[in-house]
Image (tube, rainbow, N blue to C red; front, side):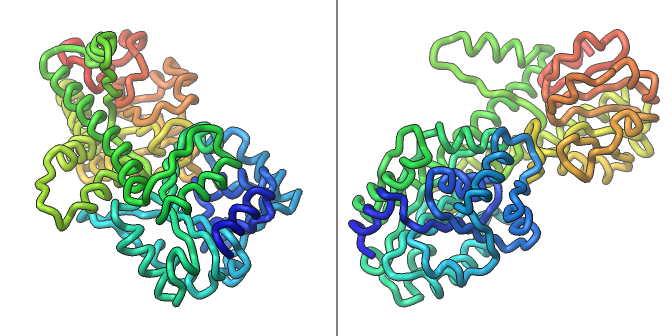
Length: 441
């Protein structure tokens, strides 16, 4: 199938699509293309996930407006089907890859899932197929890994298959909205491929689609998340400075942002999720063999990774001021997901904090209304606690009965890592908030 032929089947929506990886990105992408008239085959290695999707149920547990209803609808119209069998990809015209690309403890990309997909895919993909990687990858990966792996099957790029990179831009809780309304950078191995990809994504994206080369697309995605990481690190460092000087970082931020062209980010208990803790290392990995001595990016990562440690220190300071022994104390951590109103626990700062506290002899209880493992009774968990640490601003926590909790806890100490504005509780609790002066506590 030629580029012109692909262009025709995209235009009349007769192109057969496939999406490999049915997680936070792949599933809503598959559902949106199905809703817009395309025959879509979803492939995932987890049979239980495939079974749920084929029964019309979304396996994503977080608050995702419209996703459950959309999955049910496209299953009824038989436009979407899920499978674990790669052999079924043999008749697909366009294949999108949406698998995880984590980094290890040494900040090296772990492309096991991507390599496995490419190895299986090259055995079954038909001539003329368009392959698009939506996963976030280090700059240069399309040319150094994806292209060679696919060509090992005997087909040649731009002759027998076409290749591109279109990084996703989504956040849990806004998956469908982000996919439809945020602009996308569309990187093709050739300008013609990039424009072909634009014609495909126009079916589901209502924002700008910018055709570029693959290295530019790889750079844009890793740079945009690195920018956020660096800005959050700056805000966190200002929070530490404000605490030390007896100031309120939240007031400082408000006034700084009144100045034109300033956008100081939110400080807090740490940075989580699949993207921001990882993508700066992917960007850095892209120049690993170049003579560039990176300073800012690693420093920002260090600051953000250490914010849970700072929360633990705040707790210990509060205990010391109240003559409470850290060893043997009991603490309730509110929130285990990395983001409010989400079930996504990937790289959650709460994971780090819980481990730190337990290693210091603290008995840790965890509550999270969105994470199945921690959906216990909030008030039962609070009983007998020496402190409560707020790590995630779930909506449910704004409706807590703090007077009831005051009667249940052993010591009325709150460590607020997300600035839930709990000043009204200071008659009944000692409230320690990140970025606010200890002098006032």
